[in-house]
Image (cartoon, rainbow, N blue to C red; front, side, top):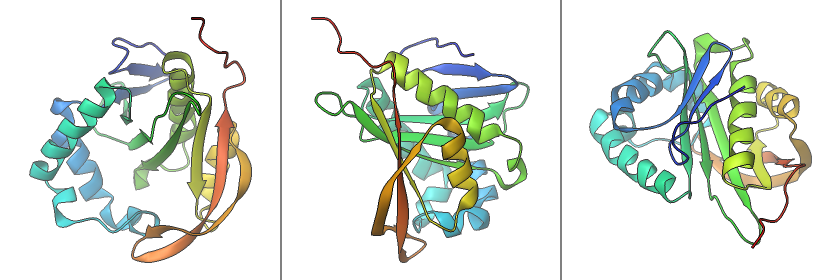
Length: 194
């Protein structure tokens, strides 16, 4: 299903998809993704500073993300087709914790033109499994706005289960929004032997 080259900077393959941890070479590609999808993603994301849509802003951000990946504190994946450099989506794992929770939080977005093709479902399943197998994660937490049924279907298809509802959970597009809380538990998690 997938392969990984370096533990801290994985490169995964699923069907026709390539899912790589972000690196310096990806700055232009990721900026183009967010510029292209700025209006489409606005209802689902926090308001972004102008620097978020610039190469200069992403050069700094990629340095930070790579440092977090190196220390297994966060992972930021880019999704593309095997034969194309164009970024189709992103998946971020933040707040990666080991003992005692062995957990993290996932967020993601997908290009407007890539909707409805099962891309995020396949990519998210692969990256979750990679974290289970390589980072010793027990619980991946996610949330979605109740009106975002596409996201709900992706999470359910990948194995996330409903855990509750949080009022005014995240500041999205300038408004506090309720979110449905979900989690995917690693069914094969075992304590590492001493």
